Image (cartoon, rainbow, N blue to C red):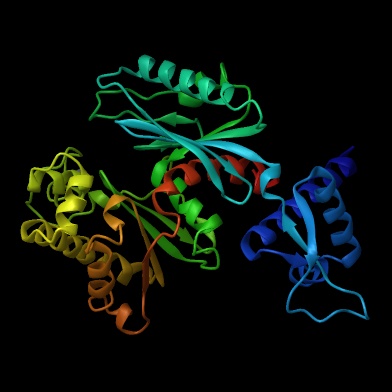
Length: 385
Ligand SMILES: [Zn+2]
């Protein structure tokens, strides 16, 4: 019995290993996989046959730029993107953004649904469950294998709860238990910025980076960290409240109870207040039109972020920072100023250049990240949970 369990677990671990290698590196030959994993060619042949049978992997012609072995061509194995789909949902106070995400992080049919204001927790949960069911019913042609939810605020990862939100006046919300009564496929929950960081690691330009930081510059500011190739977690709720790091001691009072938090000076919310603008599209237009007050406000916000980020980089010695969220748009001066400032300020940046770029996943990173939770914990990492 024990032997059987061990064999099954070993098989799952080996399958997971091959899937993650193909995700990270793209098409590979069986020989290359064998060399990297130290598994025998016979084992790789067996595992890949199983994954092909399951439809998750496919043969994709001859591999480019490799030497044929003993006259045999090297056949490439690749993930079969459309073989596995999940539903990704990003929740905020204003809207639900949801879409289908496939095995390779391709996204389709993104919908943005306004959330009525002043919902209590029961009303919100009921609304969320209803929207998920309606979305799934509208896509009967797609087999959805899981649902990932990236939520604003702190999350109890072990219990699948949204933790009490002083701002909304909400208590802890037992989100997974509630939804799982109505939705049959597995549901995965995490903080939305952690989910975006995972998306950057799985599908973005940072696949090959073992240590990097992802900063979300949106309604509020948050961050996620990948350290030693893993999404960094600590304590019950993870980590990443970058927006509540202190920029100005004795500065503006933050809703978190502290004073001078970065959120109060450099978040989208702070900038909208400063410029008396109604939404970020208006700020974007004013910046594109070259309005001086808008440009100055955005530049000042970027400097605030750079000061706090520089201190953090001195401590952790990161080589890459990825920016995402509305304020990271290439149409705004924010990313350029952070890139310049951060490569001048920290002591460690003067030793090694720090790569800073906006995520290539663009606006979709929120939904891809949420879907990424269901892909990572429901498939790629399944056997190790
Ligand atoms: Zn704060």
